[in-house]
Image 1: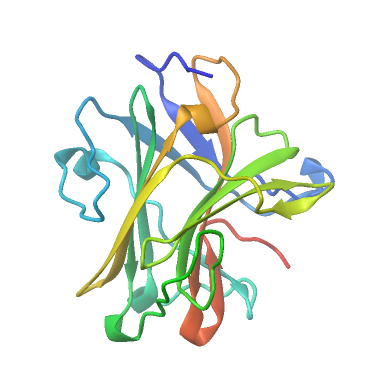
Image 2 (image 1 turned 30 degrees about the horizontal axis):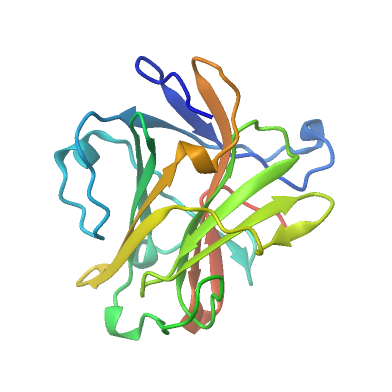
Length: 216
């Protein structure tokens, strides 16, 4: 489905996929606006295109487990920016880590998260709590993707065509993702209003973080 995005603001906000009723979800939800770019974004794991400097930052992640609701320490913060063009949506993320030499990384096959650190996004184009798509990338660049539904949970047999790159750097590690619109489901609305969350796992401490709180 090709959207009409030439003059569109793409608005993301979190949708708690597994809430039975939205009115029972009293947790405040964050929102972020993606920025339109007409410039080429190279998916190479380097945050060097000027367009990224114009995008707002999603940060202030919250621990999901093992201590649900605990804020992330500044030394392990995550900063994510979102762009879009006429072909797809882009995510650029810096995962800060004071010990980049300890970042967990294994060369595994696609759809095998192994014992790696993880960065990823979960998208629901219709914001309807029915079906979401999960896109994860590891520091080695290995991809994992899945469909998530209330009835069947997480189905990793679905394989989308999307692009990612990751690099460990002196600050921690960086990931870039491009998801073409052809891999996503969303309505033909001028303003796109999607359910959205961001996830990060630090494997050596067995801690999972989310941009918006997932209440265990």
